[in-house]
Structure formats: structure tokens, C-alpha cells
Length: 266
Image 1 (cartoon, rainbow, N blue to C red):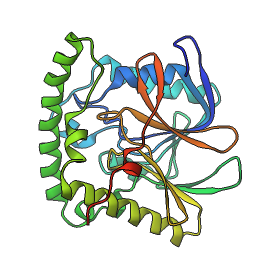
Image 2: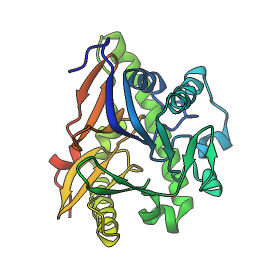
Image 3: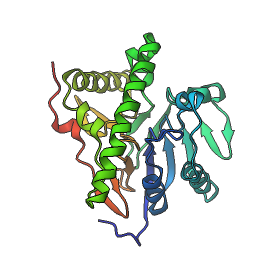
Image 4: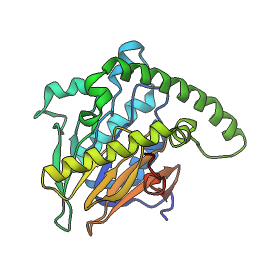
């Protein structure tokens, strides 16, 4: 376990679903993580900035600006930074193939691990039937989700006063609702099938805010989670092994990858 004074260096870091521009974004925890973790390559796997929310109301505190500056600084210090837009920052899909301040913008990319395995890195919203065919329903769901995050704020204010760590009501509820668990299972299967279709060994994605590291019938499925509910990222070590990291301020705690342990509803 890393101590607050230690800094870890990885071959690659994968971060998604930060949702800068929303009140639910855990920017302070992410800053703490970025200060203590570096990598040769940093993949931003979509929904880094929440364009949906910013269109409705502007919320951009200093901590959100600090996150952007910290990521850009990693690029200036020599890290390769690759930005793969998601559905909430889809406005950047109009700039695929370009560079912003040293940040590459691509629709998806193949990452080769240190041990030679090939991974499709993609946000994943392209394989979400709600996003593709009923965008109005996605916006409706987004509003309900924001309401749940508002409840989270009050719950965690009370928890902090008791000296307890952050806990996500919305993440807990997601794994208790049969339809949500079923959706997660279908999403994992669909992304794994896309990886198989493309002839790669695995897929690294985001979108559903549900961190995981598991085998899907021979395909290595990895989900980065998010920085709203779970505060997780994925790291590739220099030997080619992967780790889901759940970040608690000033300490580094491996995540339990709940999708491996939860049965998928039929």
C-alpha cells in the first residue's frame, strides 16, 4: 500500500467518467490521485468534461480547472495523453485526429500491453442501445442520476462529520436494482464481443460507472469505473498486469471489481 509521500509510476493509466462541470465530480480526490500517480501513457476514456450539464448550467470551480491543468502538465513532462470522447463530451468527436496542448483526440485506440496483449480502448456509449436509439431517455435518466447524486451529497456530509469515508448511494442502488444489474451484464458482453470481432485480446472502457477486471469467455474485460461514484482508475504495471485502483485520499486501496462478484440477473 502506498503512503502519502510515495509516488507510483505505471506503464499506463486509464481514467474515465470524471464529469468535470458537475457537482458530483470528485475533483479533489482525483487531484490527490494524479499527484501521486504517473504513467508513460495516460488514457482519458471519455466523459471527462460533462457537456450535457454545462449546457444547462455553468459549474466550474477551481478544483475542476486544477484537474485539467494537472493532466496537461503530465503531457508537458513527457507522458503521452490520449483523449477518447464519450457521450457527455461528444462535442470533441468533431476534432478526432487533432491535438490540443499535446493531447491526442481519437475515437478509439488499440493499446498494446507490456506482455504483447492488444486491448481496444473505447468509451463504450456506442454500444449502449439507449444512447444510440433513445437519446431523450438517456437525458431523462441523467436527470434522475443527478438527483441521486444530490442525495449523495447530504449523506456524505453527515458521514464526514462522523469521520467516515465517501460512500455512494447511487452506486449501491445500481447493484440492487435487477434491471441495472442486467444492463451492466449486457454491456460487458457486448463490449467483449466487439473486442472479439476486432481480433484483440481485451477491451478497456468506461461509460457505466462500474469498475471491473474479469474474463469474458477469453476476452479480458476491464472497466475504469468513474470519479463520481467509485473514484476508480485502471493501471497497467510495467510487467503488463492490470489493476483496478480505488482511491481514498492519501492512500491507495485496490478495488474489489464488484462486477466479478455480483451475479448478473437473467
